[in-house]
Image (cartoon, rainbow, N blue to C red; front, side):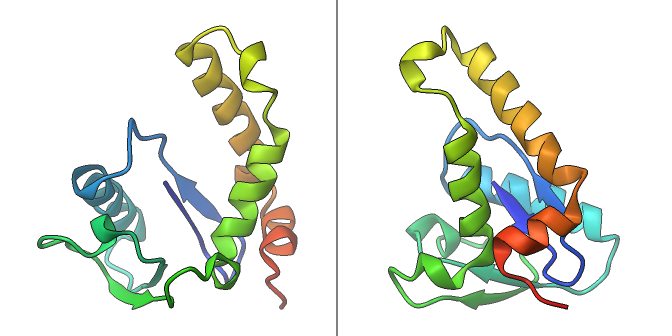
Length: 122
């Protein structure tokens, strides 16, 4: 799970075991901690686990259903997927996690690249 700051291209991400309300809340808790009390608008797509229960979150803006092209971080996930080797070339889950982390480092250390991938203009 991850987020991109559309003002400066910085990103935050956590590798989670699955996607559900509990893991999403854990990510939001982590994300809110990174903000240090600064306000944030969070653009969300529409999985049920983004809306279920009493999730604590900033100011959510929900995109229309089935509109991933409107969410800048989705472009980043596509590039990340394209960087991945074919799954039958990965021997185990630890290797997969290491590859994901190494590929994410490219984005963490290059906010200008993130901005260009996400279509963020100055």
